[in-house]
Image 1 (tube, rainbow, N blue to C red):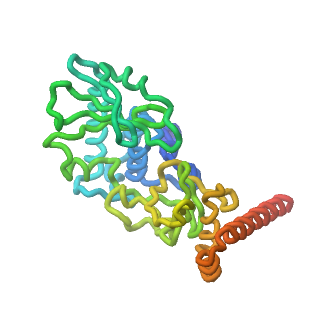
Image 2 (tube, helix red, strand yellow; image 1 turned 180 degrees about the vertical axis):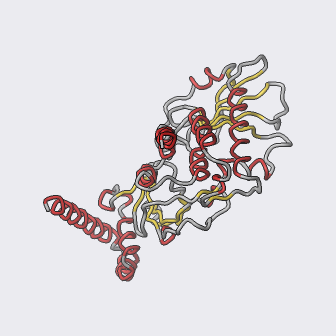
Image 3 (cartoon, rainbow, N blue to C red; image 1 turned 90 degrees about the vertical axis):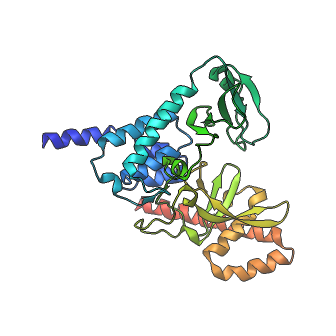
Length: 333
């Protein structure tokens, strides 16, 4: 009994995997559920873009040490590789530890170059990683974080280099070797821990509005939850939901792949949409109630778009008020 209590206390002291998930909506939802199986936790930790690589490696080593043999096979996950999960995990830990140590080592003939997140141009070269990092200014909300490359000045242009991806707080979230003739094989890519597929339960429903930065979407029927027994994908590119976006300037809709565990995904009330995105409030009504499609199409195609948006926002505001009233009455009881 004492041994079991000690194990329980030890497990409680372990790093909480949900702290590595960028999406507040997913993070808060998973906290209400039993922990995901170890393999799924590891994939989510490796995919994190809000915690440093050092923090990720520490958490993964904890899970590796605490997971009994055979437990990694449990759960709903998949890779484009036939390697056992513990082999994939060990390879990730070893390669990233080596890459991180090598990346930060200043040497004669080695330079660092900052590549902006938009992919255009670069700054440098710098003689140390610290100097390169110091050159990175504050990252705007609508900008992708830059990457910093470490290469030798006498290398062939296509030689392998070490590339560090940065977070918005300018911390290193990953270091990979890129380029070169031996890099980029299916085993390297398909068996790399962050590239795996993991089933992730979510709180979303058809017609919900979500926000990622300054982008907004209305989710479609792809949000219907599975039981998590059968993988819906083979790699991280399948960890998506689908939804409609709206471009007011062009008056057009888009159907988007949404990586829902990333980019700060949050639920948004249709009543709180910015003016330029209020058409999505009307789309949300249609998604929730198929009978509203006829009225939507009539208004949209006959030039009554402003009225369509205003009516949808008013409807959402009434729903919010009704929800708050019901919640208050429930508390009083």
